[in-house]
Amino acid sequence: MNAKDFNNDRIASPPQAQDVVEIVDELLAKAVAAGASDVHFEPTGTDLKVKYRLDGVLNPVESLPAVVADNIVARLKVLGGLLTYRNDIPQEGRLELTGAAAEKVADVRLAIFPTIYGQRAVVRLFYRNEELMDLGRLGLPSQIELQLKAIAAQNQGVLLVTGPAGSGKSTTLAAMLRYIAATLPGKSIVTLEDPVEIRIEGVTQTPITPHGQMTFPTALRSLLRQDPQVLMIGEIRDAETARIAVEAGLTGHLLMSTMHSGTPAGALLRLLEMGIEPYQVTSSISAVVSQRLVRRLCDRCKRATGERFEAVGCPACLGTGFRGRVLIVEMVRLDTELRKALLAKADLDQLQALLQRRGHATLLTNGRELVETGITTQDELRKVCGTNEGDLCL
Image (cartoon, rainbow, N blue to C red; front, side, top):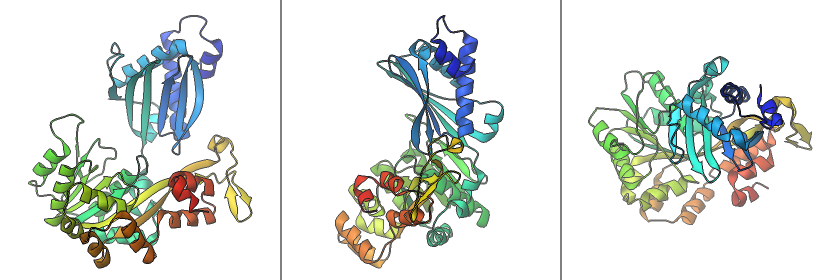
């Protein structure tokens, strides 16, 4: 029995356990085949919506009767080793896939959350994509790639990668670490991550458990006594972590981390708002990279409209018109002029104006190049940049 048969029958009789097993297995296998990053199981009261996140966008794929919703979630809980009898608390676990799907996927995570209509489940899929571990194959502009390689050779300083969730920050840092391990053998490289998403040979990786005793600040303080040369912190989330990270960058460590910030200038000001002294920011930060992911037009069905292309949709891209994603990125390296502005406590508008006067290449600059070469569309760039920034693309 497949998902559509299950839906069409409307479950005239109570569902059999084997039917539920087959449905869950089929939905997960199809998600992997489609390259989905997440599978959402959303109860609505009248049915159970199943959606795949393809290239960053949620797409409905199935609608199952509400009567099977609890059974589907219960099966996911069994696969994830969670408590099937607790329906009133959030739970998190890991799944093990079998068959062809297991060969493509490195890790599968499950999150359960109670709602007024029942339990909502989200399965996250992490793929074995070796090419994204290569710094030279991320699609970075050549100038930025060269600058990142130069920073990788430094003995101290802080590199920040900023952007919203799902913008590829962890992938960029993983590629940086792999590049360092390959080109500078003998360096001690250690990471603190919540959780460890990409395993890197030659790098000591440590998971930070949510709500555990080993927090980022606690682990980072101890780690600095372990004689590391290169450090990667999954994310700077609070003032204490920021302070220790900046101090590490000032005392003979190359430290890399991520922050949730819209622009490089915004990231620098956020450090100041966390209580980091301006002279510490200007002395420790080597560069700030801001990045986003835009959907790539499907090569099989994209259609030319004048000098640009538009999405059409075909079986190869599941009717979305897009297949895969590509990076847009900007990078700011601290120089004398920018350091002086930070020491003078310039605000965001002043920092942005300074960068604009220097002809700084922004995310939009990089994005427009992709639009002009037929890799993505104007609408996609507008959506990723946000309404206000997107208007500037016109």
